[in-house]
Length: 351
Image 1 (cartoon, rainbow, N blue to C red):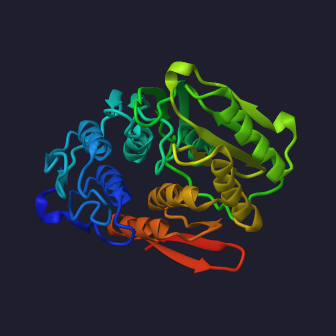
Image 2 (cartoon, rainbow, N blue to C red):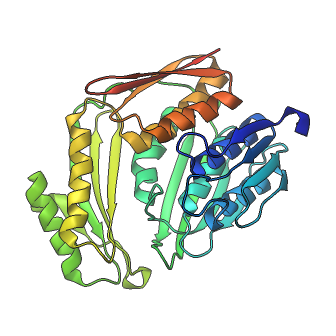
């Protein structure tokens, strides 16, 4: 175990100033064995400090690594986290109410990918949350990239959890890569192989899903067989997630628009169409949300293998730039980011 004198100190107000600084810091503290000190946690958010889902991430990270922790309290804006060795095993992590359990998974996953044995994780909480990657994004877009590294991530959705009730249930199986993670380049998406939309609207009138899918089909020129509804039970709601999945030769992207009381079905659709069209107009391999996650995965693989990697993304968000800056604090890697007219390029190399 590392000592406090070797702590990596992070300013939680830097860059986008949100919860991802905390989650990436925890993930890399566990993966590298370096202690973490973070202040001004979520300083740029309307309610700064640790909320329930962030505290769940801290507690999960502490359990996986046997960490010593100070400041793990609701509302806390400072945290000290001193990890021990990462332990593969069977875990159960729950987030109260509708806090995202998908974010808890993404916090502990990098360390468990480097463990000496597979792990199984039972997760409870929100599965389809605004401002967090929904289950279907992780299953279809993120998990295949984990497998390209030589590891494995299998996900099973037992019950959807929407805001504000939560109550979702997911099982995850994490298998580390034999011989270490192997980096790869992902600079082109390849040919489009499938495109479809689906609407999850449990606990809502049936016409909500029908209107959203009809509007999406008209806007995108998609046929009826590309428009799907269902897959949830009425008691899993009320909730509404309209999703578009674009499966290309080298990557799959998933875009989601969430319904709100103040939005019409057509407005929910318009949000999704805008996001999908922006990605389609670019020449990048991945969208802005997947770029955040891919940067961390490739950095870990570069660190383990000593080999560089690169990918292209449709938009360079402050989220991505902040995540890269946090990664560089923990790992002996450097990112080179270049914005282009139709795509941005992100390269990570060992130093």
